[in-house]
Length: 220
Length: 258
Picture 1 (cartoon, rainbow over the protein chains, first blue to last red):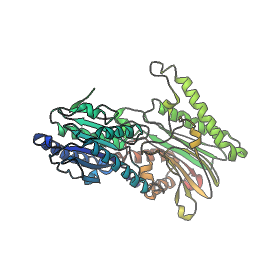
Picture 2: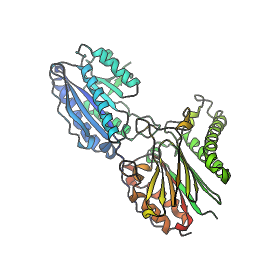
Picture 3: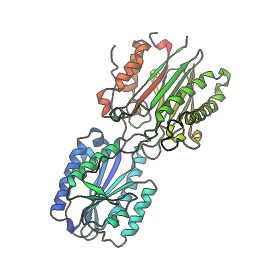
Picture 4: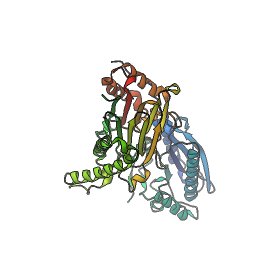
């Protein structure tokens, strides 16, 4: 019996948008920021190594730090084109402002997808910090984050290191924040890439099966 | 003998093979002297018994549509389909309530699945579609072009769609009537549409569907299903989708060797 010689290519342009809000405050200086930057390289390599995720996952990286500044250090790009930015450590922790900008950028990207008839998964937003939010209105921002999740606009994961204000992080999401043990940023970003990959391939009616969190614990 | 060669294939996706989850796609086909009936369904991944839902609903719908009198087809298909689906869900709940007594009580949502159904007569296709997946028809003339008859419908997110277990599901049931000269009808689930639809998702990808039809034209209908199954099981498909895959067809007999 001869085989059917048909074209087998992925003609979809489905995207899984993912934003990282990364703490570039002064307290990250030294081992922490080095570990975070090494972790970003792991994220780049892992996503590029996954055929489906490389095409579907779209990343944006936001740095918070300096004098209450929020910077898009890597604008939206497909994972296959992602080049790990270098995050510097200096200044304050305007986490509220960073998260609000992330939410706005996500909605703007959804509009672009719709305008171009591109299907997309529910966006994911990861916030990684080692400290306490320093911007005055962070609680309002946190409330807006929870509302966005409740309205099904985004999925938010908050990850804090040992010195982070986990009680504050709790307010940014409907799910409990995760505590990074030590400086296991490489393991964290490995998990993040596996999670993003799983999300990019999730099929209709399915929930995303996240890999086990080997780098930390879920705060209660 | 029916003027239509009917058949199909539903195969377990790579992700379900790895997680030992049964194939949640199903199809049913029937042929009478005056029509062919195709029904295809994709069970919701997170629904406990969606494989059973898809299997039962496609079988019941195909049977019900095959029993309608020819004079009633124009008006009776939709109400018959809706009534059959609702009755099937009620029956499934009743039949399986006892088996699942140790777990949270079963609801319709546990049998959630999409639905594509086509009544194919010479010159007319009556198509009903809820959710994703797609349907195509090939013109007998016009260069034998394959036309996308019904597009997938998703919610805001790519992994959201609509199921027969949703409240007021029949209000989302889309009906399409095609009139013209055609010789092939295909229904397919969203495990096949990434390859079968062209970029942009609004047309058929001829380099996929035409070779399938060419194979059908050159080989006995007895081997079509296994050949299509082999095609969809190739390793390169794993990089495209791990989802279950199903496709069924009605091919006018004069186009096949038999």
